Image 1 (cartoon, rainbow, N blue to C red):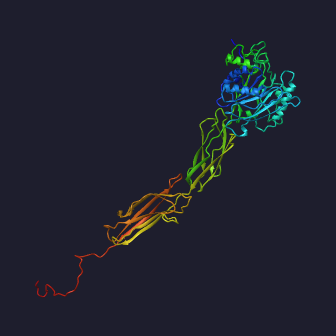
Image 2: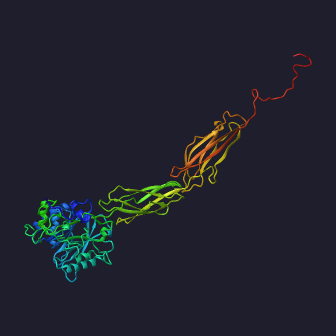
Image 3: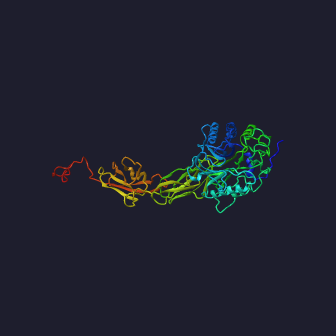
Length: 584
């Protein structure tokens, strides 16, 4: 039975390393550092297929190498990467310093190369350059999304702790000049035998200026590393034990018992915002914690398989170290919200959707609102997970007075490219309509008198309804009813009633009185009632009824007798019968 690893009491973040093998992140950046051992030397072409075997399943986005010796070596390694993943890789130009140097390889689809510089960290001993590479994840423009990588290869061997301290001091002093919040990492072959080495302490200690302060993602500072089996899954050297065959030319032996290769970030990568080291992603590739002082090829076979172990054994005496980097949040929202037209006192609310289109496991979007005068937005802070369904927030407009309110809603967020997003807000608030029978004064009732006439002599009259005081900030009047009651059905609206929307010009109606068959010397009366309301907008209310009293009197004329003929002359006749004669 294979022995069990002996580090169960180590902090949870370190213990979790074993459960994260070579799974590709969904869209974090995967960074790998690897001392590729005197590359290309005389055996580069023979080793290239083994490098590809190791790197292919890792899903690497950025690869930093130590012991890279020439531009020709960079070109050869780049060609090997593009054999593995055709057309996907690019490399930074090689900078030749004393001894061996570093190389940077990256996928332009995922990472932009901004530039590089190099310097000797110890002016008293120009051993090897520190190579600083500036990169930025694709899809981000802000300087806040930049990541600075410091590739190091410190002085090797016990007895040179003071020289490594001098190198660490020079590098820490240089990094303290970084802008606050800079995302930087020192990575490479540190050659530390213990987490308590002075140079390690120099990197991690608190100073007056802590912009360049680093931390160990595994939390193994201050303790012994070499041969400390409690941390053996963090060891990175050597893949070959004493007496092994098939090791790379020049490889150190002795088996796995040292943690020489590290990735140490600045504190900006654990501040809980934006670019972060993803917990549990730090891994010494291929180390299962079961090969103390043994070759990586020795039993038990590592989880990645025997062929993978052979590849690690054949190319370098160092194991790669990898870590996943969380990318910043992004904000997506509307550029404007139009509230339309509302009447004073009515409700005015529009939903604003906020989403975080960054690909998981990107940072959650933290945001808050500041509303301009005349508008309202939810208070407090909100968080939107990357890739989640949009969050919906009600934004309101004040409708207490007529006007055309407008302004910019400010959305503050931790999207480095859009720390402040402005959403243009606009709307119109109208005063209520004012129904009246007069255009300039409030008049809710009046009389329309057709007069006193003989039958057949009545004329039509006009009735008008107005929206008193109408202007551009007043609702139109929706005249929706006109009904006559009383009057023996003799009064009418010519052509019948038709609804109307009244703005600045009143709506007229022709009124008629039907006197056919009317009783002479009779007065007829009726009531015309107009019903109305604001035009149909939010906040609309009914207007008071307008009433018009209708009156008409049918007068009498000459009453005709017999056939109606008038005498033409007067004649005096004898009385007949004659009363004196008693005859008839």
